[in-house]
Image (cartoon, rainbow, N blue to C red):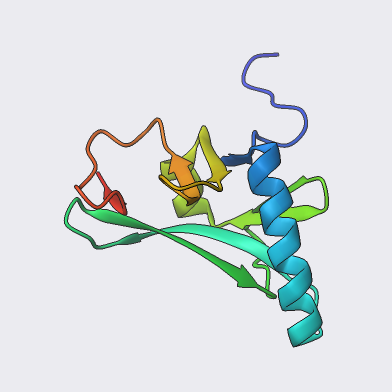
Length: 120
């Protein structure tokens, strides 16, 4: 049979071990403060100087059509429109003097702006 897919589609965003550990740490802190079960939402929104911007935030509500994947104890949700734009992306975390923080590598981005927070 052609065209038949078995199982879940690949995660639109993968987390490195460092990113997963840092998100898990932050989720634990936020969950204690909010008293709820949180997950990381990664999304793409129109805007920025290159056309799209990335959004990452902790969320409590899933939509029926969200793509949800787990990386250790971290659940990541992506809406379907964002999933297409993020397919094959990797979220990493660096803790150092240069380029500290989260960085999203997106193979679908053909152009990024100077600040690195928007793409096309």
